[in-house]
Amino acid sequence: MTPRVVAVIVHWQDPLETLGCVESVATERGVRVLVVDNGTLAPVEALLAQHAPDVRYLRSPHNRGYAGGANLGLRAALTEGAEVVLLLNDDVRLRPGASAAACRALAADARIAVVGPKVLQHQDPTRLWLAWGRVTWRQSLVGLCGAGARDGPRWSRPRDVPWVAGCAMWFSRPALEAVGLLDERFFAYHEEVDWCTRARRAGWRVRYCPEAVVTHRGRGSHGSPQAIRIRKYFAARNTMLFARKHGGPIQWVWLSAWLALSVPLQGLWHWSRGRHGDVGLKLRGIRDGLLERRPPFEALGLRGSVLDDAPLTGAGTPA
Image (cartoon, rainbow, N blue to C red; front, side, top):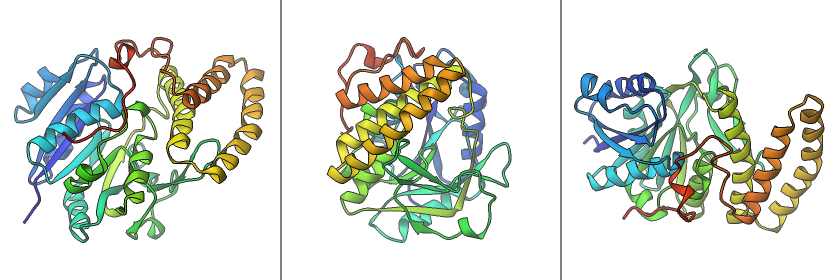
């Protein structure tokens, strides 16, 4: 029997982009769609009512970050009885049969917590945006396997991996109930790395499924100057948050050595080009992550975040 699948799409600013994601999911048989409007200035409700009236819509009055917005949808999907929850960025497009392939992979072993797809670049689908990732404990924390590579046999074998792309993740209900939801302290970036690490440490498997194919724009990596600033800050901050949660003495020594070597060189490179703000953002991110300080939402152009006036929360729970 086909499991009950609910797709949770986190909407951010572009209603037409989100509608495109909804339409790509609509081609998948037996998948219900839930859109979470994450406190945006461009609500998508009216567009969905016109073009996709069967889609369930949730709106947060505040920007809760990707992790917080996703958790709203994950909780709602579990309440609705979902056996599998598909979490999607709004700039992802599913290729036909992607969800069915991912569900087959989940069904193959009850110990599989989450399945990730082969993610192709939207602009050039002959190349990968990402296959899977690993944790390197270097200055960027992670290594991106397959990023920018031409698609081919190397990326066509299913396997267990350290973590899968957060833009499209098929979670099993038992794993969400056992591991918990995303850790909202990460706000955005590395929240999927943290969740997969928690799952694997609890004895679950994380599976890459190349038969499940999606495309992804990746606006955070190649977007507006504001989007790039947000990515730089949170990548640095969340690297330190991850280390605080999961790093042992060896990992801390390795990460500290890489930061001591790379940060001054990066600082000189940015400083020589007049990009002083990039240097300050990275350093502030490292400091805030080490001390678990609240992110500077206003300076990053993220006013209205629910975390502006609430304490940082830990990993969510399904209840």
